[in-house]
Amino acid sequence: MSEVTWTIGQLAARTGLPVKTVRYYSDVGLLPLAERSAGGHRRYRPEALDQLHLVQRLRALDTPISTLTQLASGERSLGDLITDEMGLVRSRLAELHWRQATLEALDNCSAQERLRRLEVLSRVQRLPEAQDRLAEAWARTIPASVTARLADAITAQAVPEPPANPTAEVVLAYAELHTLTMHPDFPVYWACPHVRDKASLYSELLDTSELAAGTVADGLPPQPGEALDHFSRACARSRGEDDTPGFRTFIGTQLHSTIPLFRRYWQHVATITAAPRPNLGITHCWLVEALATRHEAAPAPAR
Image 1 (cartoon, rainbow, N blue to C red):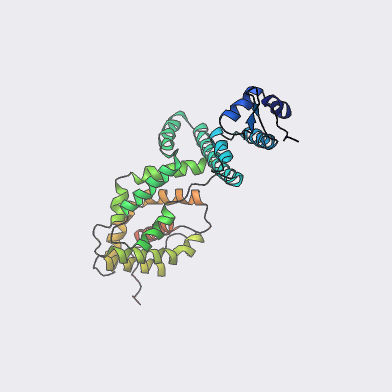
Image 2 (cartoon, rainbow, N blue to C red):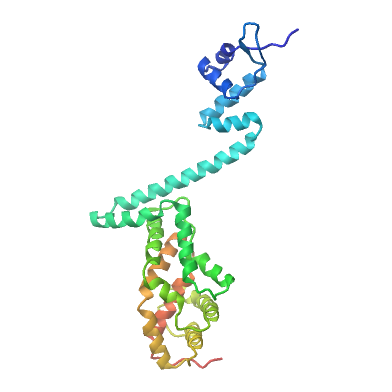
């Protein structure tokens, strides 16, 4: 007994698809063709119906024809297709969430503020590129003599990953980071132009920020203490000077003028990350403010 085969019309009747659609799927290679009849008509084996059902269901999920062609040819498996499509959906959802939060940030503000926000937010709508630009800004800012380990530790906190489902406040904070890195004082401060051993200074500043983190987390105002003494001695050594009251007066005044800029930056970072502990930038600003406001206090003896 000869094998049962079906015509395009029979396949269409069994799936509810138009004959024209089934013919198109066949023409692009999505259906296995068994043979042609004596009259030249296409005939299909039963497995073509299973394949057509699969194509029909995947098309209902908006799967592109080009992807289905790869599936039919064996170039990709159904599992690979689903994994890849899930990745695309997540990416699109992230883009939509970001766009929604951007529009919300532009919605509830004055006309003048809306124009300012529009300019700022327009810079961060292509997230991978925006993230790369922020990382590059810090790569240019951190002195070349700082070790890769230290540079990575700083960048890990200074360049936060934008969340997949942000609020309007988070999107605006992320955009403001980019604006602040363009301020002329931004690279000058971190370049430490008067410091000879920048690598050692950066290392000590990281240690000092960690030392002050608990006090800052407790909400205490800038004040003298072990962390401040460590910070002041590190600044003095980096410049080849002694940690004297005069030095504290000088360095506190010199650094304090640019702290508002960096405090805004690190506060935006805190908004984005929602971390339970203060980041290294917040603690650094606290230490500078402690030095500037309490520089009349005599330094503790070096241990």
